[in-house]
Length: 134
Image (cartoon, rainbow, N blue to C red; front, side, top):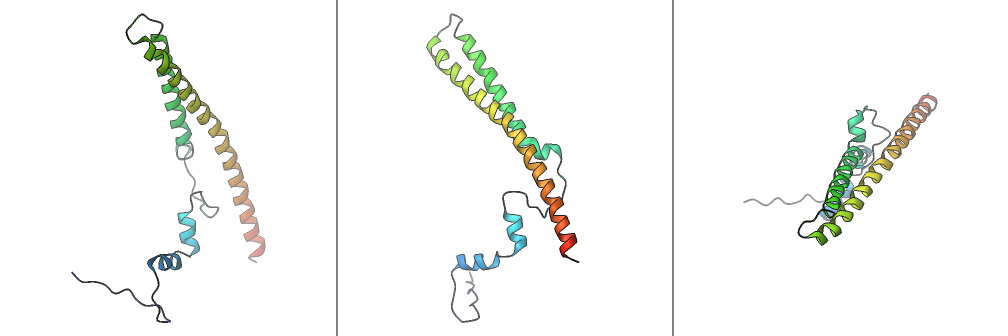
């Protein structure tokens, strides 16, 4: 097993691995790639599924949990064993499903608004580059 000796900086002092990472990841392209939100510089068009897949999944799961809660709640009206368990769990699933359903339905217009803002900012960015890069 060979051990590699980390290279020293030009002034002769050794730096910690954290500072090396900070120095090497300072470029704009790295920052652009590592950012969570989509950057203004990326102009690749995305499909509708790429844009809306998360809220669609949340709405689908919410609807399924809501229907499951309805079934569990309706079972509490039938004369069966463990009636109290159904009376407790049914409304819990109903409320959880309704919460996910509403969150997903509210998320969709938010994404639409962000898409419009992103298109406007891309247009303004192209105008700036057209006028200022002459």
